[in-house]
Length: 331
Image (cartoon, rainbow, N blue to C red):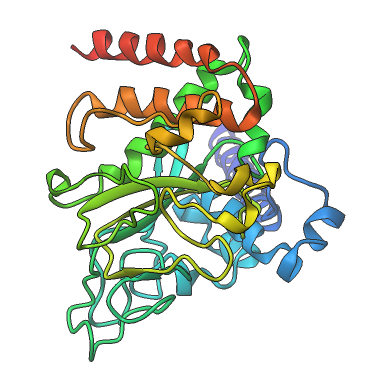
């Protein structure tokens, strides 16, 4: 009788475990919506272009866990077109610290997909905003690289959403976020040593110029803050309106403070003449492949951000101290 009682108890526990597991999996599948801190209301998302479909996809990328593809597809049904090289796996999504990187270097000739993220302003070898055309790119390897990095653990609409972090209580969180958004895409490059930063105004990140730009659009097309890391493209276009990917200037909005007086991108490396506005015009001295670059770039981007926000760039000294601390820990 004791044996019967034991096995009956084990049988009950087994089915209870199955029921609990089912409820967990089911809740994960149903809870496919964005749960990142500061995510807007459903009404606000629905008021965005395309009813917020792009923003919901970006949040889905940030939340992606490989086991939950069903939930991922519910929230972002278009993902095979944008973050997959084979149409079956979201292999263009990589989580690194505080950042999620979109894109990779290697493409897929069989499926006809580039590894880099397509963009209106970028010609990766098959035309602007075009995925791989095997007649033009038989191996589906891009001319140059275009990757995006986004905040992984919180929703931030645009660079103005960083203002609350640029204070003494959250500035270290800001430094960590900027560091990972800068470093994660660069870690995917082949032969990064080929490139310097795009240092001059209107210097595009093309194959001819052999430079890297790491820039945010101050007024983005997708309302989920994203850093463009771009280098060595076949062509870059700056029209229509403010679509360039580097340290570009648009004289038609030179009096528009919201669009940064014509300097419409916030970049890691900005031309020195932009320094007429306090805090802007900072640029790392080190090349992107050099060890000193990440610390200099994090501080530079923070200072340029402070200039846009009208805040004291001296608050970014915490980023220098933070990066020095990390260097000493890993030395």
